[in-house]
Image (tube, rainbow, N blue to C red; front, side, top):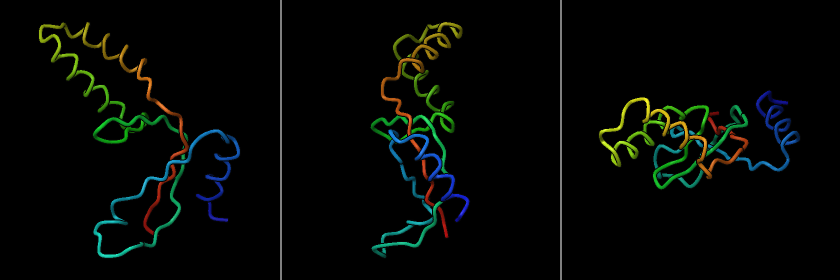
Length: 111
């Protein structure tokens, strides 16, 4: 059995209540000239996912970007905020994001 498939099965067995979130590489669906594309099962992992109006974020990959997004919102509310207070508010915001969902991420890659 393919190593990536075995890992996916193991994660599903160990985490039966988690949703599997397939993430398709942009290299696979670069245009809309066809109805379907050949792909392969890529690596899988358990991660925390958060989605806003713009995109999907994964904590392990995008934590810095999410912190920057919170910093922008906090700074817009109070442009005179100190760096220390800004860091404290960012940390608090990161802990209170209610939309974090623990999922099994399945990368769909080129064959």
